[in-house]
Image 1 (tube, helix red, strand yellow):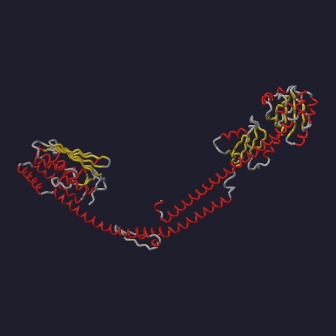
Image 2 (cartoon, one colour; image 1 turned 60 degrees about the vertical axis):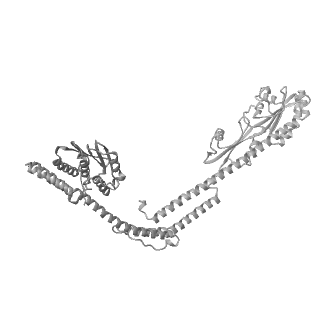
Image 3 (cartoon, helix red, strand yellow; image 1 turned 180 degrees about the vertical axis):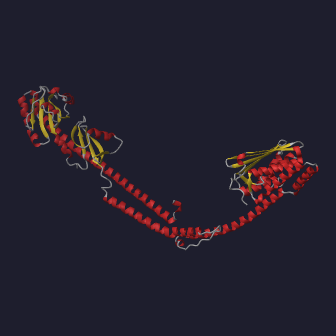
Length: 580
């Protein structure tokens, strides 16, 4: 269907496809760039958020640690703890009550001596130990091993109350005697969990909806997220850069806070690259509009100066009548911009002239070939063949062999009737074989029992058509050059069959054969110039004239044993034959 369209229609289709593909390419390129930009922005925002929260958490912990060092440096506190006097311990600790009152992120301060006497300053009320011994807590051994350094424990103040509510982060450290550096007590400062939530108050939830602050054991200190912590951790270890939550693409990232080994997890929204890029979208639309305008203008230009002249030229060629080519004439529109159009027209007209000359030449050559074919046919009607055959029949008549004379006349008449064939070039294989049989029967009148023959032709090919007078010259060649020079009886065998759409014939004799030198003369390259083998040469020439080059033949001969000629020609089926 497409090959029947005019070139202008094909051109329009090509430009439309090009415009469509280009638009998609521009869109995909723009979307890819915007997606990369959005990802880079999300990564930058994520890093900034992590650093901000990390600094805020570090500042909060450092403030609590600073206050703990103030308490540890108080001689009244260390002396009261060393004395084991509970009343003095409470009085020494109360001097720091302003810390609890002024620092909103500190819930309370608690202190134990080594005899596990406790005292505290609490924002709301004084708590009492839930256990009798502080040494039985899960953090006591760790604190003692640290010496004077602090550790952070989530809800370590549960030793002070029966409540299980997670309300604070505890900074715990040992209080050492400044004289001998031996532990005299334990100090705990509780930091309100809301203070850690304040570390990310300035972070916009729309941009960073998922956020976790985890202690060194992985427990949640503070969070806001639509993604569960296991899902967030899985996303961090995944090969994919993003995770989808509530129809939004989230970039997960993490940071470990130096000094305390806490971890901060944030999930930053990757903004929709197409929805958020007004300027970029406008530029993409502008580029596609410009491309469409350029393609349309280019299409009009090519149509006017290339496609239309070519269509005019095609119309002129389609108006050819009969078998004669006509020259074409077009206006000079294309020549204004494309000299090739004028060259194309002139070249075509020159080709028409050359074709006309070639037709005349072929016609003359065909006449010559027909004449050559007629000569070949006349060669088969040599007078001496007629004379010898008539003499032989006269001898039979004088001998009183009337039946043999009748059979000879029948074979003679049949032979020339098929030979002439009312001027037809093609006859059936059956007729060709019949003519060969008639010819051999006529020869037997002359040579008697000195010659025998076998005709073995597949019955399935007998109704196929072939060029006449192909096998008879080959049989005559076998008799004259193979059988007659023998002093003993000879045999000629003709076989025929079909193979892959070709008729395959072989003519074999058990005559004198040919020497290597004689075979060399009959090679394909020397066959055309071999004047001594007219039967073979003339037959091959006639086959080439009729069938073209789609033939094949082979000659095999052994001196003293005989010769085999194999011929392969295309099949002509019923309906193709009998043409004048």
